[in-house]
Image 1 (cartoon, one colour):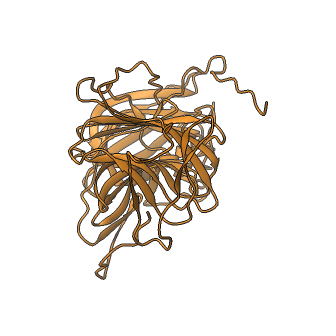
Image 2 (cartoon, one colour):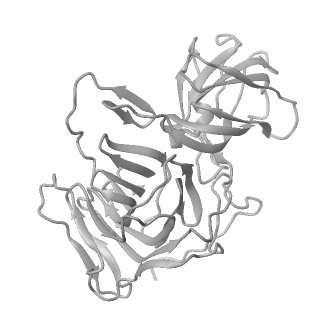
Image 3 (cartoon, rainbow, N blue to C red):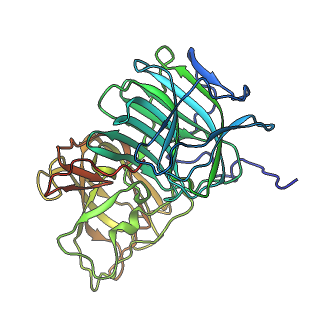
Length: 401
């Protein structure tokens, strides 16, 4: 016996805040496709390999073991196993992933596959240590969402992506990692994808596709919109602070809200109030803000903070969102509702502090829903939350898959 694993919650911690645990109680629709790989063949699937690969073909194999699962070991950019029809829509895809040793890129579920320049893939990028949701279009490959979370090794863990209309909900180990609306109805073939594993190896088993057309999906829970590990960033400050960085308020972990990073604690003798910054939401995405919360250090908390939003640029188009007055109390975690508000940029200004020498904010949480991304134009390449307009014509972007 190599390991014994006991799972649950520490006393008083409860379920993980911000990542919803839906469990297995959701209604399951009609089964569209299933394969437990016990047949020892992959004749139900079509293999697609990146034509730019140096290798001639990938090495998808059935492992005839007690798991009867599917195995992939490859050393070139990308390969997919595909099934289903192009007119498939409103479905849920489930599989289980076992990371034996993985140093490659994104491995996970392919959906909405219409051709080699039109598909989605969601899963775990082992080289970047993060979950990713990506989309391939004729403009190139684009990351729609990401979340930096450690992946347990040598353990079977379920992956599931639910599609209903234009909504994409991705779950890992029954916790919602991504839940967003892409803005366009999604349809197409489904499958498994993996890329650049090199000396890595992953196993997958029990692939199943169910319809979501009748059962639907649960209402969305509020998500942590401005986490640094999702790609939230500080992009503009009129007067940069001398000693502290506003990003310290965004560096909390996503799977354990008991663990926090640095504390924003400027010396008010040098960094005088007001202090102001503009934040960009992950991947330049629009959001709908519902709540703003803070974790304070127990003393020297701010007394007043003002917030504005803009749907235009980091410097223009701002309108007032709210003014928050912090009431000194023993509760270090405080949360404030705001009118549901659409935004692409959030401006914050700290105007007053209870302390005269130092100000302390451990973390800031902006909660709500992720909406669509800003439209991309021909010739514009998207790199995470940063967009670069190419000065020269690029006939074909390099495939990351």
